[in-house]
Image 1: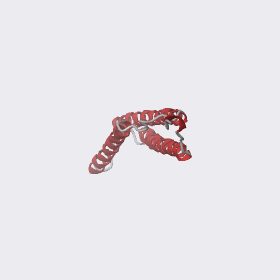
Image 2 (image 1 turned 60 degrees about the horizontal axis):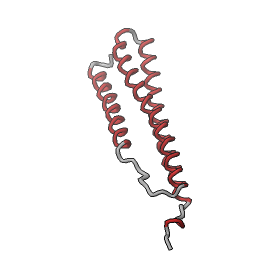
Image 3 (image 1 turned 180 degrees about the vertical axis):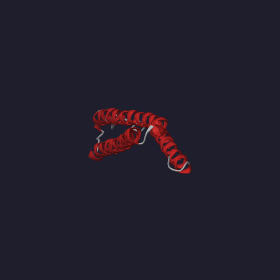
Image 4 (image 1 turned 135 degrees about the horizontal axis):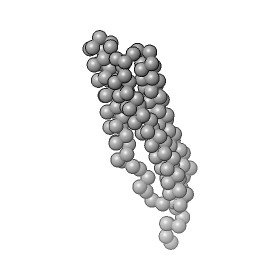
Length: 130
C-alpha cells in the first residue's frame, strides 16, 4: 500500500505560511514608513531651509522613492508567496517552500540604503549641520 495518497498536511504548516506572510508584510510596512518619513523630511527641508538643501533633498527623495518601490515589491512578493505556498499545502506537494535568494537581496539593498543615510548624516554633521 502506497503512503503517497494518504499524506496529511498539518494545520501548523498553514499557520507557518501565514506567519511568514505577516513577517514579510511587517517588513514591507516598516520600509514604507521609513521611506515616507524620508520623503516628508526632504520636502520640509526643501521648503523651509532654502536652496542649500535642494541637492540633498533631491537625493533623499530619490532614495526614499526607491525604498518605497522596494516596499511595494516586498508586499507583492509576500502575497504571491503566501498564495503559492498555500496552494502547495492544499495539494500536498513536496517543496521547495523556501526562497533563499530574495531575502538576502532585500537585506543587502536595505543595508545599503541605511548605510547611505548614515554616511549622509555624518557628512552633514561634519559640514556643521548645513
